[in-house]
Amino acid sequence: MKKILIVDDEPDLRTVAKMRLEVEGYQIIVGSNGQECLDLAQKEMPDLIILDIMMPVMDGYTALKHLKADQSLSEIPVIMFSIKEKMKMEGLFITDMVECYIEKPFEAEELVSKVKSVLGE
Image (cartoon, rainbow, N blue to C red; front, top):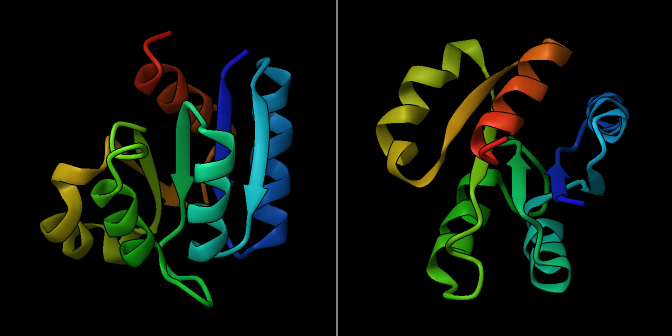
């Protein structure tokens, strides 16, 4: 069973994403900020991380930089959650560090499709 770490500060979004991906047979771990992302990634070694950008404590950009700088975590693929207006600007800075973006608010089927694609399923 593949393990996915979902990190977003919006509880409703985490719940919807978690429930939808569990139906597909994934083990889901959740966090609410960038520091939790790093801590949980180190502890759980997920197969995929879905990461929001705007979060308290540590934002997604900073968490992503730390993930990619850590040799033990750098190969874990990352999907970024993003608001449509920010996607183009964000892409200029981190396109080479993420597999793809999912626009918020997201469609459940798009989430599943992108997760399966990134995981090669």
